[in-house]
Each structure stands twice: as C-alpha cells, then as structure tokens.
Image (tube, rainbow, N blue to C red; front, top):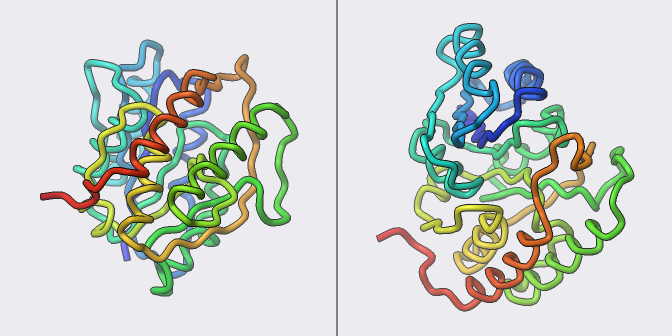
Amino acid sequence: MKLSVLMPVYNEEKWLEAVLDRVLKQTVPGISGLEIIIVDDASRDKTPQIIQKMEQKYKGKIVAVYKKINEGKGAAIRTAIEHMSGEICIIQDADLEYNPNDYPLILEPIIAGRADCVYGSRFAGGRSKRVLFFWHSVGNKFLTLLSNMFTNLNLTDMETCYKAFRSDLIKTIPLQSNRFGFEPEITAKIAKRKCRVYEVGISYSGRTYEEGKKITWFDGLQAIFLIIKYGFSTKITQK
C-alpha cells in the first residue's frame, strides 16, 4: 500500500522542514510507498522557498501545489485530495503539534482492513500530551459532544488533525468547508455514510499563539453552526 500524507501549509517557515524530515523517515508496517501532497495556502513568509528546497532534497516524494489566494485548511485539503495517488491518506499539519511517529498506530486498523477511517485522539490513551489551555480543551470537548449528538458516534476528539482514510472513500465525499470547518463536515459525512470509524490515543505537543497556533474562537463558533448544518445535510456522495 502507498500512503499519501495531505499537508496544508500556511506561514510555517519555522517548523516545516523538521516536519517534512520526520514524515519522510517514517516506516509503517504494510506501507510500501509514501508521498507528501503539500499545498501552500498563499504563505507570506519563506514557506514556499522551503518547500522548493525540500522538493529537491526528496525528489519524487513531495508533490507541491502553490495557491495564489489564501482560502483555508479545508480548501487546501480538497486540493491535496485531487493530487494524491496512495490507497490510504492521512492529514498532517505543518508543525510539530502532532507526531508522525504515531502513524503506525493510526494506520493499522485501515491496513488490517478493519476500518475505513481512523481518528487520532488527543484525549484518549496514555501517551504524553503538553499541558496548555484549559478553555481550549473545554471547547474541543464541547464541540465533540455536540458532533456526537448529531452523528451518533462516540468520539473523544472530533477536532483532531490526525484523521486517516481509505483514499477511495474520501475521494467520493463532497467537501465544502474552506477553513477549520473541515473537521465537523467530514465527521458528519462519514457518519452518514456509515463508515467503520476507529479512534486511537496519540501524543500531542500543542503550540501557544506566540508559537504559531492559528485556530481562534471564531472557528469554534463556526464549528457549532457547521455541526448543525451538516448534521441535517443529505449531500454525502459525489455525483
């Protein structure tokens, strides 16, 4: 099997090179090939130059797409999906909050044929987590609870970045959200498709806003609206 790592990027010059090095050094039982589909979302720092440098370092391993207009994480993921060629895909933020060493744990249920998608939970399991914002954790747990009420799933971390999918599945799901609304949207639609969803505990090293964290209270409010919107949506398959 080949793994496609879908990496939306915006202004990550500080972390990007280290993240790419870590991802491309991963070995996962059952995975024989790996590619990174990196979508630069109109970065205004040195991110595009770093991507070009890493393309040369890892020739044939990185597929880079450069957007001229900043549209958000969800839009960048849609673009990455269009360019991927692996049988399995995983979403990877371009920072060091999420550890690629967790790939074997996250991907195993899909490789074994038990799961259609796997969520890596920051709130489950005994792996190490950096202690940061109390109200962020409350907000995340509230959004997960609200999402679970509409989807009838029992997730512990709907908002997690680490989501892995069978590629043939996610290619058939119509996605619309441009920003962080991707998380509640994809969760609602895989639930309506009655996909086999698994969840595993992962490590987590969160960032402060001074270190580059981008999600805001506005995204939390938007997530509430989108949980309700997609909870009633019937558009779950590409035409």
